[in-house]
Image (cartoon, rainbow, N blue to C red; front, top):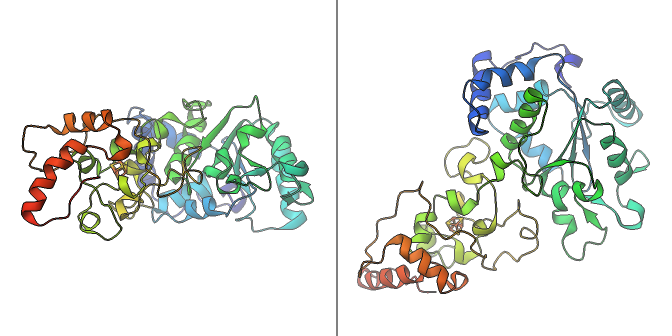
Length: 374
Ligand code: SF4
């Protein structure tokens, strides 16, 4: 599977130039100087790099699938060649005893050197009987393998905090990896699916500096999960101006207005989806960009727990500085910033930017557009 096993050339069908460009972008994206891209590339191509053992538990395999779906060839190449993926049940060419023996050998040959990646939740009820691989309960496999790994990464929301399998009534006692490995530092890359760049950048950082990037209190790399989706969302100026879609397909929805009233959880969800998008398919390639409210998949206690239609708690009401304001008439001198703050003060859950919305409504009535009142 990796280039050591297949004997493929280090850069395969990806040019060195493209590979360096990717690593430079990853460096900048992690807040490192652009010049560090060369170091990231060197670390990813050395023969000394640690292999990755990828275990799959209670999940849909969507994390693996999404990592392999990007149209960006560098990304696929990195996953399959550069990170030395030694074991992944979905991608293994071998199966059964052959695959298990290879995993054991890889772990043995790389004690305290390999990176363990876990995909899927860990069922804990009844001793963890609800997920077995090769006759062993998954919870025991995770504990045993983690004790021999250099670093542990939980990829996807299921592995990070339980995800869909942990939704009420959680019949299998599904938990995230951090919960079943107390006392162990577990990097979490939540998302349903997670973004491939967040995973790869974390791995590149570890390979380069032999340490983990700075993490938040939930184990998420701060470079990827340090800001609310609401802060960087392209629809944020509509929120600040009090312009909301109120039904799927209504005039506001067609105009690209804010999706807050359709249940968008961006105001209480930390992730970089609006900044790095998904799958390299161009601008707008993320849920809100396509007209669907964010459902908070990266946030424990939000995704799969708060109903999709429920309105989010707004954690940050100050208008984002990075977005150009939307052109709007606001009558009596209510600024966009003041509207957002007043909206918060009177209860944003009932309709953010309500003062701005009132002023806009007067204008809309003149023009025949739908009212934006809560
Ligand atoms: Fe974007 Fe959702 Fe925030 Fe509206 S509520 S600005 S759609 S993140």
